[in-house]
Amino acid sequence: MNLLLFAATECRDDNLLTLTGRRLQHLRQVLGSAPGDVIQVGQIDGRIGRGQILAIDQQRAELAITLDREPPPKLPATLLLGLPRPKMLRRILRSAAEFGVSSIHLLNSYRVEKSYWQTPVLTPAMIRDYLLQGLEQARDTVLPPVYLQRRFKPFVEDQLPALIAGREALLAHPGEAPLAALSGSGEYLLVIGPEGGFIPYEVDKLLAAGCRQVSLGPRILRVENAVSSLLGRLL
Amino acid sequence: MNLLLFAATECRDDNLLTLTGRRLQHLRQVLGSAPGDVIQVGQIDGRIGRGQILAIDQQRAELAITLDREPPPKLPATLLLGLPRPKMLRRILRSAAEFGVSSIHLLNSYRVEKSYWQTPVLTPAMIRDYLLQGLEQARDTVLPPVYLQRRFKPFVEDQLPALIAGREALLAHPGEAPLAALSGSGEYLLVIGPEGGFIPYEVDKLLAAGCRQVSLGPRILRVENAVSSLLGRLL
Image (spheres, rainbow over the protein chains, first blue to last red):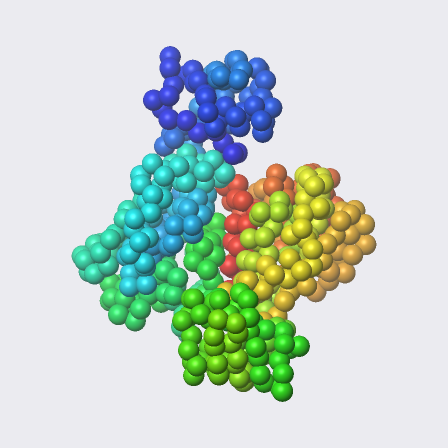
């Protein structure tokens, strides 16, 4: 945790914050914080600043908060992913927030197992929790919205063209077209299939909607490494 | 497992391979293999080809092996990493092999906890096992060598300059110098510190040995995401 995050509703009297639970444990056990210490804090979806510890014991910590700067800019990238298996989904949500993606769409596909849509990882509270872990790591405050697209064809036919408008949409899929360097000035939609990839019907639909197919090389990367390979090019 | 790997010493009569244990379970439970089926196989540190299943039951599978092509080329990249914590080390070894790095050096540093050097993950058998998992994923056969550099100063002063010769050595460390696109034609040494980063003394030593400092942006990435961001630029 490189940034302690809190919600605006947790603050009293404009700038007093009381911490319990996981964040208190972090202050006590990882940082060994004492009264007078100053740590980096951020208001979720808001600004970043300092928190001075006024008091701390086993039950709670009291901090005085001063917020004085904006979080880092988001990457100009929206992710569209075949819904990964739950274990990988957790890591990808965390990493996507860490890299600073603008928003995330999780898409059904032929090779997505139906049971994946039932995982508790997809409940809003758990999605938020994994995203917050990524933001805490990266020192960001702004949660990327996560959209669940449970029906491939209606989404790709009816919503995807509007999402692509104004963006360069790159479909990472095995093939001949190598991936050139991405420019930091454009807006990107990065599309990555599920384990095993999109089926040819789905690839055709995605290309028809305006995606351009690019290859990540002769190796078969796990989805999470494909994601970070693409996002890493925008840093 | 996208490629079933075996050691040359496991083959009899030139091309017969008997499988038990984990690989047999994979054939039976994941692939549902039957006699006559053909799967992709690779000889560790050798060529890739096909394995035809001659017989399969609960105890063993018999395959006839034909090797007919070379594995994909390695990335032109050597990794030099502050030794990560064991849990992260496992994932990084797997990912580094998956991306196809040429070799890996794990380096001591002020912020590497001494206990990390005692982890069983650093035994040659376990290192090999994690690397093989990455190769199986990527459809590669060639194990990158892994070197343990337990003393920072002697390594950086006496060995690093020779390792850098002929390569572009990039030290990913917070600062002003942004990272431009990496060209696929050069040879790279990619240097990434431990959690918390190299200390200033270590940064100075690395720069004196010939590294160039580059920044991965305003966000603080976990080591594994810093690694895949850099390697992804070479795909």
